[in-house]
Length: 112
Image (cartoon, rainbow, N blue to C red):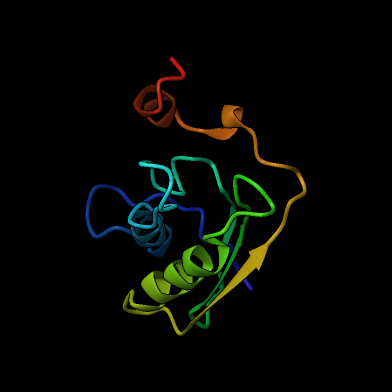
């Protein structure tokens, strides 16, 4: 098993970059910022066999869109060529807070 943390040098995006791009297309229906920039994705592991494991959280444990968001993550990552399977693990440790957002997300939501 190997984490793919190597950045590609301007050519074809590596698998991690493709996964991050896919995650930036997943939104909580109540928040106009994608889950990646919200800081909801804690870990992305890419194994040599094409399996992907994503550990993520939600803005609140009782999020009514939880099932939809997790399904979107799995489906969009599995659409990437080379990904054989995507397993999404939900965690609330550590709990999400707005400091986990990117500067762009904070600006979009009026926190800056």
